[in-house]
Length: 239
Image 1 (cartoon, helix red, strand yellow):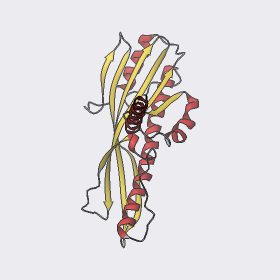
Image 2: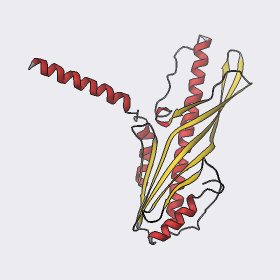
Image 3: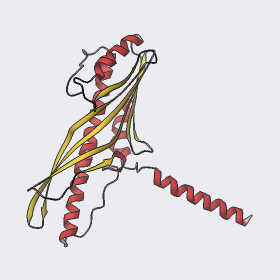
Image 4: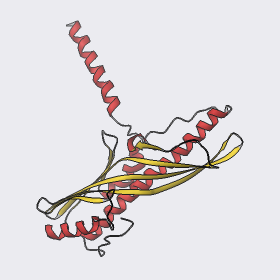
């Protein structure tokens, strides 16, 4: 019996360890996004793959299924041919649309700090791939956006030979998981690391905010099209 108890505890501890490794850090996501947007009917969360997901159901649409399909195809069709931005699936019978949109340079932030005795400015420019899926049923549609990661180009002024560009999954970015800020400001290396972390935290937080704004704006535009509030703004550069 004792051996069985020990074995059970060991299995439970191993399970908890695995769960900790695969579960993303969500503690900062709730106050940052959910509280301000849940009242509008969105589900916004970081999934088990550290991807950002938006899900919204728009119902009570006074259109036939074919009418909804045609309007959505027009809206989500990119204004120009681009492998990074395309409508990859159009199925009228099943009522499904899938595609991807490359958000090039969608967010830009500058951060100034002292690198030894030199005033330095890092300019962070973010790009991301937004995957979308739309399911159409009678009188309602479901929109799902997924953003897996973003790519960051960092330009350092005055120009440095240090290569600072990076890519990161959304669930590992600020404000979801802030990088450690060192306490010491006395040692130059610690001071520099501190400044770089602060710059990354500030820029990634703004990039996350800009990304949620893009998704929410798109959902609101689709709502207006479905409810006939505005004309279809198809093939615009700010899709």
